[in-house]
Image (cartoon, rainbow, N blue to C red; front, side, top):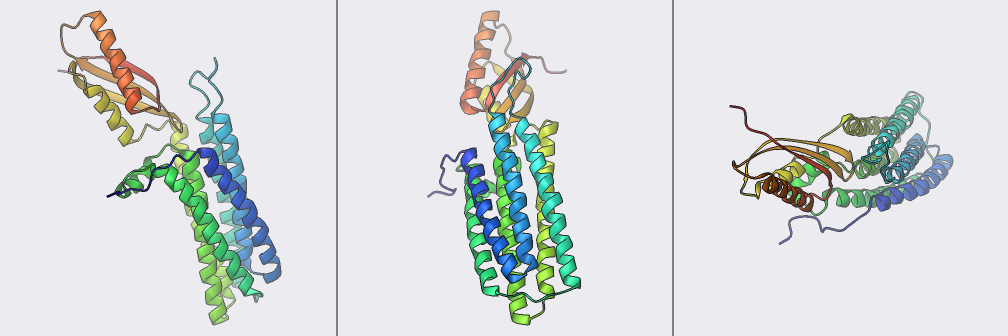
Length: 309
């Protein structure tokens, strides 16, 4: 019986572009409903869509520039440029959407005004929940990659697919913002208390700020030089340990230089009395096995060391 989500190859372009197109439709619908209803919740929804659109645009640029081939100045390629554009997208979301949503919500809470055409607002928010939810599901499926359900949490936090992770968080923002807005307007419709329109906008602002800070931290870690996930490092160690002449792996250092590009530096202790030719052949075999088990390992350096006594 399958315990994980069904594996399916989903490209980073599909994830990012899908989110980009859905954000355009969300902005148009939410702006229209905001104008006819006067709801500040719908205004924040439009702001959230605009910020997501800007963030998605940055990600599209980052994904494309990260695929530039290596050159003399950048011998390991441009993969890490994606982290820079991701960082910009998170800052845009945090500064534009979160702050403006909370501010506008606070103003409406202090000076409440009636909301009209609630039915249109309800419909727009329900549609937004499903569209953002669908886009988020694409990102999650790419992040999980067929892993068992129990490892989804670990896969999300340790994944180096920053563009997919960011898109997922952006779409999760849109989904949660729509749910919070819908709940707030439903309470307003039942109670008649217009302050809930402002409360909903403030709740959306706080939620967006928290999620945007998560993206900022993830991008910052990768920009500073984050190692590969524990799962990837364990595969590297197991690949090297398959060979009988490898007595011990003394040290392993990895560096994520792109969404699917890892540098590997490994220190191993080999059995005694191997000739130079045998050592060279063994190292070649280890490198091939590592690349077989971890295709993202683009540069592998194996050093021979003796353990400290």
